[in-house]
Amino acid sequence: MSADRVFVIGGGPAGLAAAIAARLEQFDVTLADPRTPPIDKACGEGIMPDGVEILSKLGVHIPSSATFPFHGIRYVEGGIVADARLRGTPGLAMCRTVLHEALHRRARELGVKLLWGQKVRHVSKHSVVLDSGPVPARWIIAADGANSRVRRELGLDAPPMHARHGLRRHYQITPWFDQVEVHWSNGCEMYVTGVSDHQVCIAALTGEPDLKFDAALERFPDLARRLENAPVVGDTLGGVSIYRRLPAVVRDNVALIGDASGSVDAITGDGVALALQQSMALARALRAGDLSPYAREHRSVMRLPNHMTGMMLAIHHRPRLRRWVMHALSTIPGLFTLLLAIHTRAYSKWRAQDAAPANRPRGPVATSNILRREPTAAPVRPPGRATSAQGRSIFGGAVLLLTLCLAGAPPARAAEQVLRLDPKESRIEFLLDAMLHKVKGIVRLSHGEIIFDLETGAASGEIVADAPSADTDNRKRNEKMHDKVLLSETHPEIAFYPKSITGSLEPGGESEISLTGSLVLLGEKHELLLPTHVKMDGDRLTGTASFVVPYVSWGLKDPSVFLLRVRKTVDVTLILSGTLGTPDLPTAKQDSTDLPDTATTARSSATPPRNNL
Image (cartoon, rainbow, N blue to C red; front, side, top):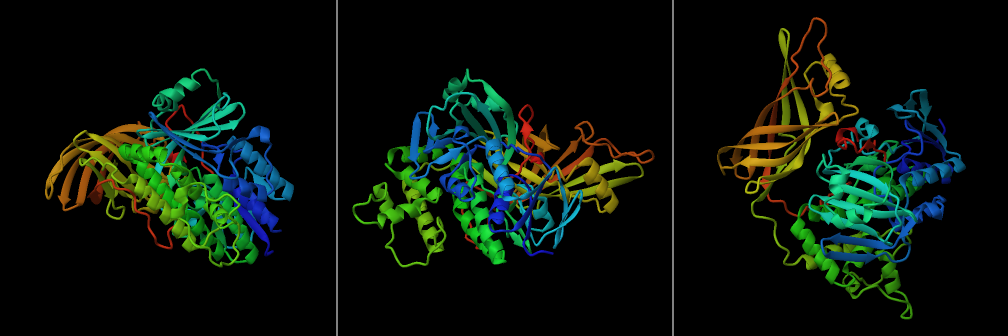
């Protein structure tokens, strides 16, 4: 087997960028994807400046007529507006299909062998098995998206830390701005990005799985009025934005990249830029013949976006805190611009300007002095990278500034509580009556969190079960259940999204509550009531909810055969165990092993199916 053979699994932007970067290092590269280009995806369609610079290094040319540069970020909520300008290279927005076509064209130019319409069946140490047979490879790059099959095969999977639903629509209208606008409302954000001189992308992010695009737009009256007479271009697409961190991104000769290697919430706008950075780091590791440097660089690349994700999701979930932050960003000169520079990894360039002779312009705002350090001799590093000490200093400065602007911020409502589930102690048990016997089974929970207010009856969050973990203690029966009934390979998650709560909690005793919400099963939403018996012991809560699922009428396959008949409903018991607390700001883990594109799209005429993505 040749030592220079690289096989890339997945042909989205992450996979194509990895293939291009490896080909520029003179590797023999093959890429396979079951889809055919151009590949679209629901996303905000903006690329941050550091990503634009890497596209240039990769030799990817995109016609200016098909793009729209943006020069900053604008936050809007009610009458509050906060602006931040990008320094130096602007960001670049374009339709996702335009980006994919440009990457595809560059890969062809460099001689990457492209196997479109080919599904990868299995990965071994020295080959990749396709429908057409095995292909030998020295190095394997898995860019097969947020629900990466390769990641699961390698035993590197981890449950999402947070997930939200996204919708994207294009309007034929001249952009009225030179920034990316982020419009905030309770439970939803809308991102407005010009993608050409005559077209605008509107993307919505929400924790409400059944929220339709038009209903989301109604929450932003000023934006809705502006778009009222603008024609809609193409289809409205749906997807899921997942925040996930993995224990590792390398196993033997296989490396994960893009969303397969962990992802941040789309609120950061960092998805494509991070994949491009990872592709360059991976190419350097391939050239050295050792993937361990890639694992270290990946951890470094993801550290700041992970912290930013935690802070941004905190203000998404806490409206009063968000409005306080926006007021601070809109009234403290230069603060938002500085935080944006840190987020886009442009701050090191500001430090270089600060260290320049006096006749050169210094940092953009006086507040940058908080972060300034005396220049010291340091080894030459690749452009755009900083030492770990610099990274800690920069992030520490960002936290300091954000803390200063949050001083005196109003606390969360005293009545609002959060139940953080322990997946090891929580599970789903089910019982199915069959002729002459009963089938018992168990499904493990991957994660869950319920935020609720017993005074108002409001509830939110999610409880997510891992469908492939369903087990009836019978191998053949399990295979039939996963292949024919649960369709676990294509629908790996079963999720419940609470909407309201009634009842009360007795500290140190037992009580009854009821949760209502939506159960998403095989991509379809079903309204459900969960009467729950609860026990409290300090801050520890355990609960048991029993209900009946009419699985056949819900569209699941009836497993009955000619002589063996089974009931058309299944008895389900949800056992919850976790810690009760208040919804505080997320705390970023400092463990050195912490690590945080290809998702199936769906028409918005139905609920964006989390299980399909």
